[in-house]
Amino acid sequence: MTAHEIDYEIIGEEMQYVEIELDPNEGVIAEAGSFMMMDDGIKMDTIFGDGSAKDQGVLGKIFGAGKRLLTGESLFMTAFYNQVSGKKRVSFASPYPGKIIPIDLTRYGGKFICQKDAFLCAAKGVSIGIEFSRKLGRGLFGGEGFIMQKLEGDGMAFVHAGGTTARKELQPGEKLKIDTGCIIGFSKGVNYDIEFVGGIKNTIFGGEGLFFATLTGPGVVYIQSLPFSRLANRVLALAPRAGGKRKGEGSILGGLGDILDGDNSF
Image 1 (cartoon, helix red, strand yellow):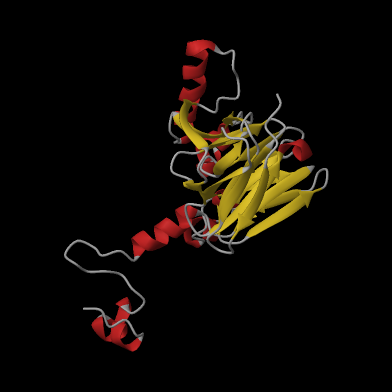
Image 2 (cartoon, rainbow, N blue to C red; image 1 turned 90 degrees about the vertical axis):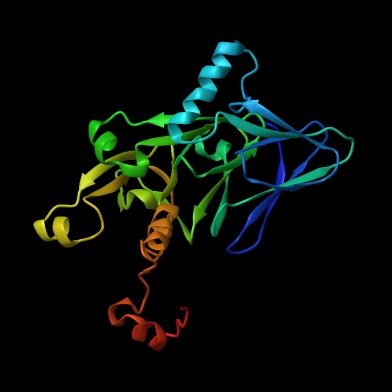
């Protein structure tokens, strides 16, 4: 497998996008809906799956694309090709505030595992598949981490994350406990499992869930401070209820609390 060699630049701070420079005949694949802008001379094409294999046949392509439905993604991906003689650029934007992380698959042994909604785009030739849990505990209690995306090949891939990101290098046997939603991804040498929090008070009143994700080295782990699921839950908690009532910062004191905290909407 030989992916196209692409140059890139990540632009912005909290609302980032990645600008990819394509030489003649080079291409890039992206999730549907991530496209931002492109130069004239680039052709956009909708394809089944990731288009990384050319000899699968019709049924193979349908099966490969169908596996993406298990991660909640579309059957189709979008490919962009430079069809003119000069260099051209195409850009893809992160869907919510956070960071875009470049992943050079050659530095991770040709494989990187990430959350099912983290993938943004990659060089043409990178394979985007799924990684199943082989353990019952992960399947029953893993939350976001049960079915993950698998990026394979020798090219560049880009994943996005919410909030601020951290990169941890785990030594052999070193263990890190993480909220399941805060995992962005990890290299293929990392062992992923689920661990019960323990304690009656933690279980009933902790408010952090019943299970940790435990990642054991050796390998590299990327972590996000604000998973989109956590952000969405906070927004829904403050959304208007039936009858026009909403839950805001001043909700304990009712309308008076809204005036005191500066929220004077009526």
